[in-house]
Length: 485
Image (cartoon, rainbow, N blue to C red; front, side, top):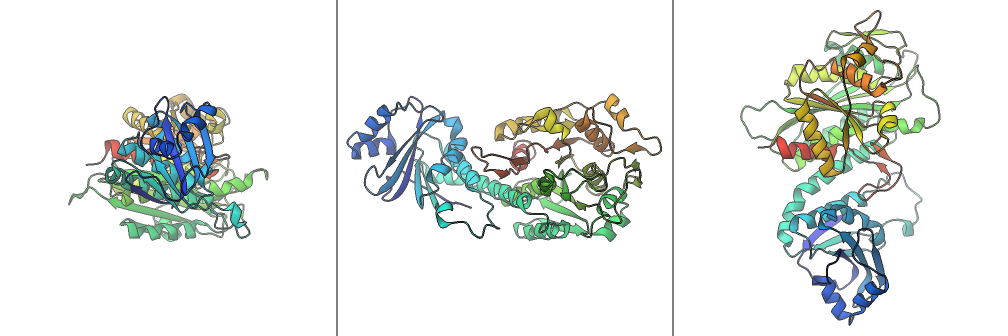
């Protein structure tokens, strides 16, 4: 993670300097001090560039004064855009070793948000790059955030940093290739989170067979890589008798060929991130523990590999889930909902949670409906829907509520079992959610279909191209706003 420090405002003696300017504001603070040192040169440069401080405007000057190697003036628009500005400045300064960013016009909280944006954008997954040229690698090692109230900004950033570290854990997991991150390896990486104070329990095939996990084990039976289920517990309320925990459940298909209902070859490499829901839950639990959230929380992930092996599940098979409900498997590529069915039942029976939120890269249909701008939100609880939606807007991880209903539920009626695992092409993401709902026993529950938002094909302000860790910040924010204390 980028080394970020907070200090009182002072012109740096070396390195780069970033000056965010609020639209319409006069040069003041460090900007004013630098303008004076340049004998009004900064004012003249900004006037020549028609710089007004509008969002997206920028001016770059090399060696403007003293030992400053590079000056980047960025239009902030309004102070509310601090986080995005923090992220968007990273490409302009990544070639410098050190950088100071002035936050004179920002509150301590906004200065912390700017630092958060910078940290999130600076992330790189370069574990397998062995021949990258030195000049192509970012050189930035230290970012100094100059704030009038540096102590308050540092304090505000501390929980943000813990959340950012949770985001990075999720991004790392989702970025790993499937030949490295199989279910066993994923589970062992979860065990490493014990150092944060999380309780970790790992269940193998024998444990899950005893629990009656016929749906999950059916998905896994075609692979030589054994399945795992990981239970992560954080008891942060401090109460002797723990509250009913909030519960987060993740689909963890470490690679999805589609099984016997095999996918087309084109783009199948993307199926290494069919475990993004499990990655998000892992990162979220790390974030809650890292910032010592005052909540009792459980994260449970079902980890399988879906392969067309000689013992693979066949279309037409009937499996019995842990709940006792039987499922006719029409399509072996609709496997994530089978995994979730057993894990959700386990969560209810073991923990009696206050509510459950599951996350899964579940359907291509949700991408057709919502593109890559929103996850699909399905829920049986209006309060939970409102809280998830609000947290999504606050963190930039937007969710759009989708319908549920009896008419859709009828589409998964089976001729020979309690249900079938697909309902046809119409409303595919909805019938998938209807399938999951059959296992929640009427408990408060939400399902986030993150197929369209788990991976980004381009850079954005705070997300470099690649794994997004969608959901870590959203759900952490929801917990902080409504379920702590």
